[in-house]
Length: 110
Image 1 (cartoon, rainbow, N blue to C red):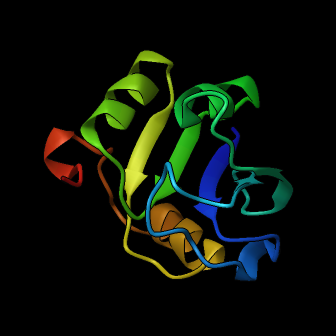
Image 2: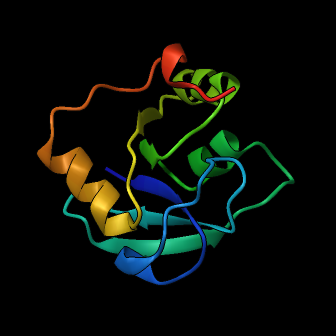
Image 3: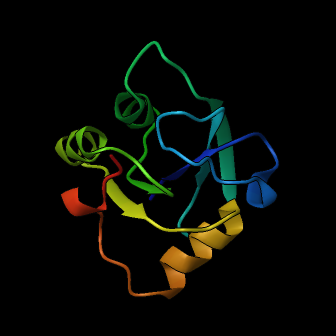
């Protein structure tokens, strides 16, 4: 499983999670054990869900995203979880250790 987190830079597990899924400097990738496997630059050439799918993401952990992004992720087979957390390590641990449901339209930001 490949997990993507929208982030503000390249500090691995200590990097801060970006406030919004589609407006981030980087995406940090983790495996299911919480180890960082890579980082890519956030880009505007394609939609973020398409970019993440191209890089093999199966799951996204983020603070917020819009309903269109939730829909596109779902269509591409990417699970999405909205979790309030400050760092990559915190957001991964919250997902791994808590009973959290996948994001739905009511979880989308305005």
